[in-house]
Amino acid sequence: QVQLVESGGGLVQPGGSLRLSCAASGITFNAYAMGWYRQAPGKQRELVATIGSTGSTNYADSGKGRFTISRDNAKNTVYLQMNTLKPEDTAVYYCNARYNVNLNFWGQGTQVTVSS
Image 1 (spheres, rainbow, N blue to C red):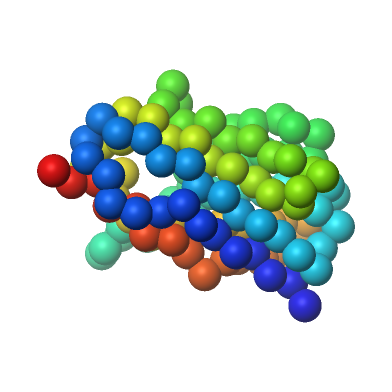
Image 2 (image 1 turned 180 degrees about the vertical axis):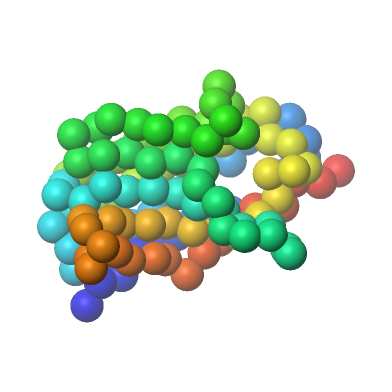
């Protein structure tokens, strides 16, 4: 049974930081590309950042220079460090694990709210 469990969300003031974590189980973690996506109210889910099995990273323009994705294969965990947060970063953040189109899994999401 595949499980992706996100943590680290919460309420933060503009300009603040949060680190999201996603602990994976039930998959061969180091073989999967991992990613973070987000969905704001009334909007479609969008890419935030991905990290491949070899460690290559990709970021949406909205997070470049502010967000850093990383992975710890020994802990089966992927992280998203978010700095200089803005109100428009408010969304539910979802962890994704993808091996191929048929092996593509999602976490339950964690709420991030950026507000003063």
